[in-house]
Length: 432
Image (cartoon, rainbow, N blue to C red; front, side, top):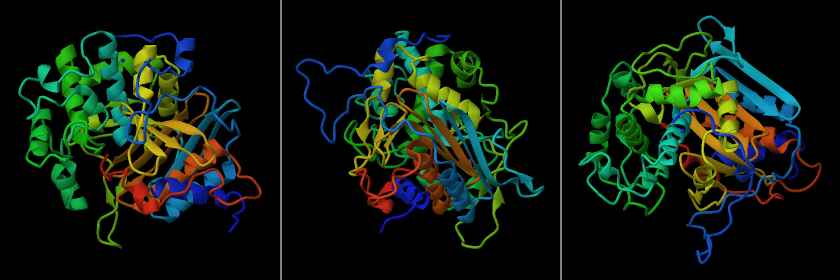
């Protein structure tokens, strides 16, 4: 069946996602060039690392704003009170909103509003840690226990294993939020130490041998936060501020812990209970202490696009370190979704590859992605969670933004993009 635009674009999007010391480093040509293969190295395979692609991004096309709007409408129809998308490209900035940012007042969704970004925090944490690598204070392939003696039960777990979700450390949130609303209410105002969170993980069986397979776990980035604080002697909030937020001028981005409020213009978050038809729970105010360096940051759409674009353009990391961050491995058998060092890559139906991260925290779904050259960036958000249909619909903003209008003819899989929606969802945990 041939679907006209924008419906065809949205169908493809649903298939996809039903599924750092001191200042800025100068951008150089080295950041734009693909790395060359190491002499004598084995070629990449489906289970091994893939080289960073060259700077050319196929289909430098205008976003399909009609499809972008429809994706947001689909998101609110699926249960989100509101949704927004902000696209930055060579022709400027386009924003679209649907629904409300506050159900009690009826205030309309606002593209400038701040919100909790969930696991997009992981990319911020990774940049800080990789800056410490550039400074020679941390080594990627050194055991975590060499920096934090006795923390982990296995000396084989390296810093790289944490950043790639290949440590085998269990994700403690799977048990913590086994029942969505009761789990949330039990931690809404609680303040954890890093070691308490690691202890919760170690009480569970490990998921894999170190380095054996990708298994998403918030525990990995709790330990990353510990490494940052051990190496710098300062809290992660100070390091985010000094190394990323101030240099990039991110005026709406902050790490708020253990405070509970989102200051200034913001969207309220609404959590869906597990029971169908039960009233939404306003989850806006919480410590997010259960996540910390794995997911406690606040930002807005403009700041997220600025951050992701600056990152891939080489303004935060040295060339070789950025190349390592962008070198990805598949996260499942579809070979359309990949993970590097604290960074996702999605291969869209039109052939465009986008880098960034997804975020889920109680009351918010987030997508923050950019093309390899940093010239086109999308940030989209829905102010709900525990609602997979809404997350899937919001994912349709990626195809609409980066692939533009679909060709007038041809099957939806003509661009080599088709896989089972159920498999895609496995890569998007409800708390990460």
